[in-house]
Image (cartoon, rainbow, N blue to C red; front, side, top):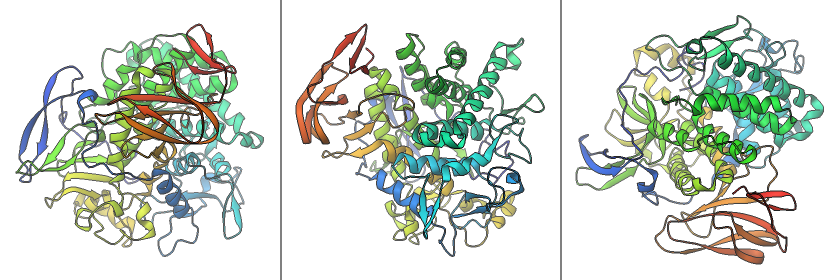
Length: 596
């Protein structure tokens, strides 16, 4: 569901439902396979990643890097007509700011052809810049029609010095706080600060420090004040100007109980960037709050940061926070959203689709199960945890393979015409780089694995008629709001010579770190496979999991083997370098390649 389409308190959380599937990482429970007639057959399946299918049943290679590049180039094309994807936002919110008198700042629509384009949309805009950056596009100097644009610097227009962070409404309502949008956006801004170090000359470092100070103060206040039951993170947001929390109205969705994990990660990155121990203390304070929690505080997206936050702090500081509890939380989900772990079959038992690793809702729009592109793609944030805790290698390898495979089916050219809301209209269009927002397992017309976005439901729902009409008659169901996250896969995934064995870049989302190229490979096959890796220089290939070299003196097209159903955490080291053991760590030229 698109930003501004509903009351911001609700977003797409207006769901009052019973938990859609009971998970247990240890117990045998049935999962449902939906038949052609809508009946369910029961498949006995242990709810653990170890017993997910090794290889997605309908796996096919997908070039995520190229898809992200094509998407980014398409949406940042100022000449798209008659359906614009990007325009100047001249909202008065930016008056008096760094872009006053410069025509405003760029903004991207929620949907392709959405006539509401023009309002400020920090969440979508910053994700678009972040996504393009992850696949190597220079978002600080993008050109169109001989004009160069610095989209990274334009994001500074959303910074409000009074509240010390990027905000959705920097002038009109600077105290407005919605943690799902706000914390995520400020976290991405920290990532951009590492990618574009030269932006420090334009004041980016000062803004980043202010953001870190703001969230450090929030964490300390929320967790150190008396009456912790009224503090913590069980809220929608916090208005610093009125010094009060914002909360979801009863029966209108969820408060963001895991938002502190996003704040904690901001603090850890601030510590790595600025070196001030107060930021590390705040990160640990937030993590300790969740580490001691006996109940699942999963909301939607922030728990995905937990494994990485805990693993990195453990490895770098000798702490002992749990990494797996956050994986358990995400798998268990809550009463509305979680990880689908099921097959879809017809009434003859023929496989139609598998939904292992996809994130979605059990009940939305007519009590239908839907998976979502955005939430499924955000699982990528868990990947860098494996660098700091190699015991997660098989879990992360399998999860990334399944989730990214499912996400590839949101695109028009990856679906048959009768299984998507726009039919065959965009299958061969340049707009096929834009995904749909959701996949319904069985839609209202009885179609399977049906690709659509919210407008497809709004047009027949009297509760959303005004919203639907505001989109305009040309609005398509292709979701720019969702597609701006494609770079999470595009940045970390490369296909290899073995279909189904992905090269997963564990450095790409591990900001403010010093590392040699480090890749996770997961072998979903029951036989040993030989995997090739392109090398620019003569190199040695070291596996962190076994603590051994897999091959030495490789150049051009190197290779190594992976055992059946196994994983390799490969570090590419310049040929002939000496390994140094220091305590539990293994170093090469003072760069840690293994923490255990």
